[in-house]
Length: 336
Image (cartoon, rainbow, N blue to C red):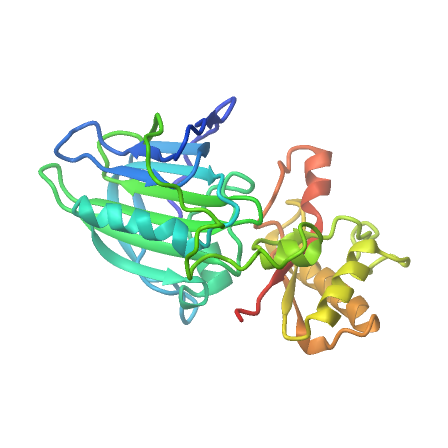
């Protein structure tokens, strides 16, 4: 469903918007005042990556993944795709999306579809959607939100989509626009009250009672945690013998929090074709799950999935990057 692959443009040095007082970042989506749209984020932002095409066709997701497919609408025109990292570690995905949704509506856009994680179709929706690669656009498979909208004008219909997710350290927003007149730019910040984790809001995460570091705290605050000390012999799914500090810590946290459930997600580098890599990554995740059960964790508290090479965190063009991409991550899946 992806458009033909354009050249991906990444700035040599990300554009860092320095905070001063209360901070907002404005992404001016049109130079025309009549068609102008300004998106203001609640914290300093870094433009991580962009890509553009002068004229293309793009299938915009407008419904949940179901029965093996995601409904789309065919759009045509100039395409602009941008990903930002938002320096707001305590905000939920709803707190990140809600003000952007209001600004889009105020600018005359009509919603086409909006969903949250499982309602979108979870894993299948995310991997059936055009997303800039990790780490430029991080998507937590257990916590993301999506919005598609359109508006008409003298120059025709413009479409956009927002994909919002977060890690334990930051928020992430991706904007795709089709039929736009100008590429997105980042304007200087303007004064706007910032919403933070300390704001008394029913949407804020209850972080105050959690330890400042450790696997459990990182899982509770959002995002996936890579278990980087695990060792798998090359080309195999067998976890090498030995004691692993990450598994001991994870097992202790799961034992102390029996209501919490997690998913282990296996990843590979991009060597070879997708299907065997997905199978290998699944088996590696299952091997880690089996090891945790030997440490006394109930099997129904842990699930195991594999995504192959579909979510890299480094370049597959170097051996170091491929090594970093071969990993098993853990993520919190319980919602209460």
